[in-house]
Image (cartoon, one colour):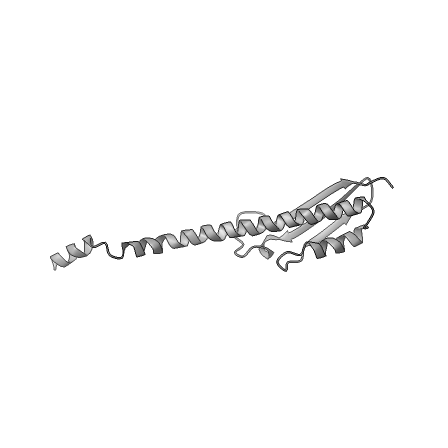
Length: 130
């Protein structure tokens, strides 16, 4: 009996499988985190592009605030998520703000656990002279 137990302790067959099982969850967590960061950065970049384009249209007086909200809502739709858009076209400064829940654009919502759960993009420009 003692011989079998010594042989069992020294035997390394299956050691790689055990290491794989131990490290697999860590690799999966890292992969999920990287995927969520990538998707949130892609969405945030798209929101900034739409906010900048929309505020430029307002500053040139091509759109009023109501039209700008409609334009930005349709342009900033990301992965089926509908953003919240607000716009201001009165005074020397015009602005557009786009907000979106982070859970709507990530697959695992790992970033929402760490802090803010909303992505926000706000662009401000001076009104062009008439």
